[in-house]
Image 1: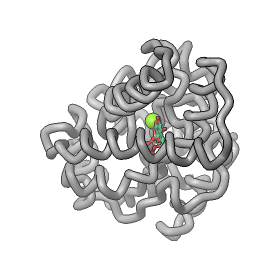
Image 2: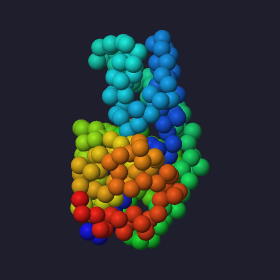
Image 3: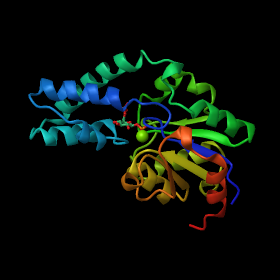
Image 4: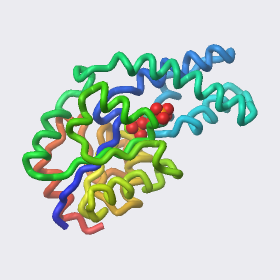
Length: 221
Ligand code: B16
Ligand code: MG
């Protein structure tokens, strides 16, 4: 199948916002009397805001009512938005602009499938909104990754068949979402962290576009 669209995850692929999520969640945990480690933060990659909070409260051995949880999540998000509002085009990860330009030259359409409700704001701060035709963020879907909804909606917005899409993701749950949606999943990171990916690259800067297109176009899954 001819590939005619790429759907990108945001955090960990186009920009590094994981460090800001960590600072926000850590501050929240500390305000509740415990701490979270960088390893625990890794487990929150690609996980929605409320699901992240549930995991964190669990790690701290705490339970909170739904109303309290919404207040805690809003507090963390206020701190997080303060940090991401300082982002500029310089915060786009290496190799990303070059890849997006190359895709545009080859007339391959570009979409975003992110769990983050802040995705449109981050795209605007970093200038990435100039490249991305279809944005699907956490406020537009009801089921989080590994459900394929976020990518299926993106494919539909781009008028593309799922089998004609490549998904670029840094989280195993996102890779699984792409697989379930019938798309070709490219992992950014280490193979041991992304066992379901069809191929891997350590970073977007090292992604070999010709190789990905060759593999995706001959993929029989
Ligand atoms: P927000 P992605 C995800 O973004 C992050 O990886 C994850 O850590 C975060 O909790 C989630 O977005 C929700 O973000 O609180 O801004 O709505 O990797 O799917 O682009
Ligand atoms: Mg991610």
